[in-house]
Image (spheres, each protein chain N blue to C red):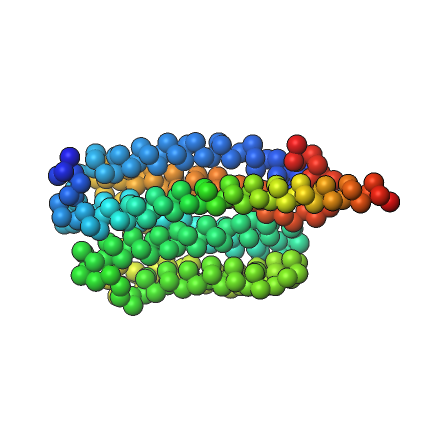
Length: 244
Length: 57
């Protein structure tokens, strides 16, 4: 089998160019979706029969929590690809994910606390879901700390990749914590096998937010990836090409 | 309007939650763009040094 197309696809200059071309195609739909969902979620969606207007925190909490877990998945997958096929670009993707993931894990924790106070009567409990999400934050910090602590780029890539892959254990724990244990956190409303337990005018803004945040992540990741590729290419001749 | 802002008494939880999320969305755009701009500047400097060295030799 001929693999040259694959190597060309994964070559830093090619990825650098593609990433630049693709960024606006993710950024603009993301912006439009998030702004529309903001209006739909805050104004058009009806109040919840139990939580009243307070339920609207879901439109920022669920997307950021989704992003935190999804970014970790992308990071671990890219790290594994980099480790197995010795692909530098994959390591660069993984390295570009960590900061974004950490940000949105913090956002999910803060918005969750702000939702927990009026609904549960407390900002924080050592509940399985909440604890697992806090561990996710430490995994992101650990990944970034490990990378920052190793001078040799190749070793930093491999060591941090191993940490990212081990940390994947935490993902199903976050996902199923509300089912396996007696959690104070409410069960999934959208991402479950059955039909979503929400009326359409509540659900639609949430789905738009989830898609908007996902596209937003893609756009931000591509910009960070371009920076990461430039930083890694020490003396390559294509730099001249790229910087024009 | 003030009724909307009051959010039925949930304002002091809801608006900070939205503000934090918005802050993260904007901050990540700024961080990514700055990182890219800085990397470009750094790469340009590296290229200039290399060209100087090749001219001297």
